[in-house]
Length: 106
Image 1: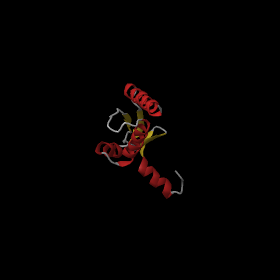
Image 2: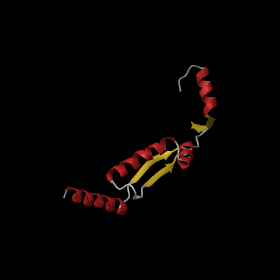
Image 3: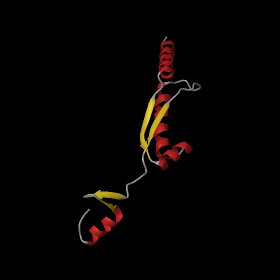
C-alpha cells in the first residue's frame, strides 16, 4: 500500500511541474557570463545545475523530461567616460589623475 501512495504522490508532482514549469531568474549577466552560459560553462551554468538537481529531487522518475524556464537580463557594458561636472564634460580618467596629483581623494 505504501508504494501505491508514493507513486501517486510522484505522479502529482510530475503533473505540477509539467503544468507550471519552474522559473529560474539569473538576474543581470555580463557579456562574458552570458557567453559562458551559452557554451554550457561558468558560474551561471553551475546555478542552473543546482536548480535542475532540485527539480530532479522532487520528481523521482529518471526517464521523464521536465521543462525548466531560465531567464536573465543583459547587463549594460557601456561605462560613461565623461562626467558632467558643473556643466562641463570632463574625462573621468583625466580627472582622477589630476585629483590624485593634488592629493584629493575621489
